[in-house]
Length: 275
Image (tube, rainbow, N blue to C red; front, top):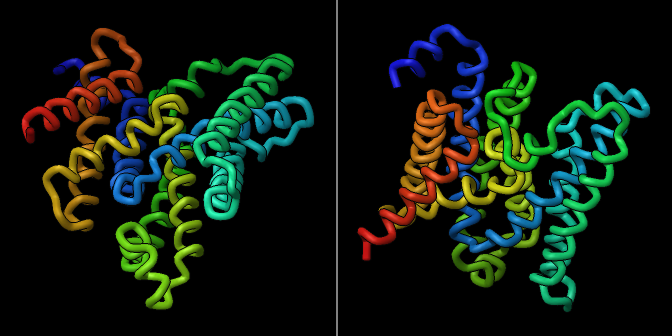
C-alpha cells in the first residue's frame, strides 16, 4: 500500500486514474440511485452493451476516413444516447417483450463493434480495454470530457429531482398531477446513457452495469431518502475505485476487475449482515 501512495505522488497516470474515478463516482451515485429505485437495471445493461458498436464505428471512421474528431469516446456517447432513445420508445410503445428487444440490441451492439474493430486497418488499441476498461489509460482530454458530462448530469438531476422521484416511485400518480412522465423517463435514460459512457473508461463495457448499480443498491439498504442514498452511493463508488486502484497496484492486477470484485464482495457482506 505504501508503494501505491508513493507512486501516486510521482506518476501522473495514477493521478488521472484517481481523479477520473472520483469524478465518475458523482454521476454514478446520482444516476445509479434512479436506476435502482426505478428498477431499470436491464435497460441500463442494454444501453451499456450498445456502446461498443459506437466505439468500434468511431475508431473505424477515425482510421479509414481520417475523422480526427470522431474519437471512440465520442462514438460511445452517440451510441449510448441513440440506444437509450430507441430502447425507451420500445419499452413504452411496442407490444414486443422488452427483455427480447433489449437482448437483440445487446447482441447487435456488441457484434457491430467487434466487426468494425476487426475491419479497422492498423488497429493498435486493445479490444480488452473497451470490454473490461483500463482506468490507467485515462488522459487529460478524457478528464475534461468526464468533468463536463459530470457537471451536466449533476445539474440536470438537481433541477428535476422532484420529477425524477415521482417517476421512480409512482408514475401513474405523477401523470395525474400533470407531470410529463414520458419526457422525464427519457431524460432519466439519457442520464443513464451518459453515466455509462463515463464509466466505460473506468471498468469497461462488460462490468459497467455492476458499478452503476451495486453502490446504489448497498446505499439503499441503509437509507430511506433519495438524497442520502445518492451521497452514500457516490461515496461508496469513490471508495471502491480508490481501494481497487490501491489493491491492484502492487501485484499488477487489472484495476477495473479489482474494483468490481471489491464492490461485489461488499454488497454480499451487507446483504448477509442486513438479513
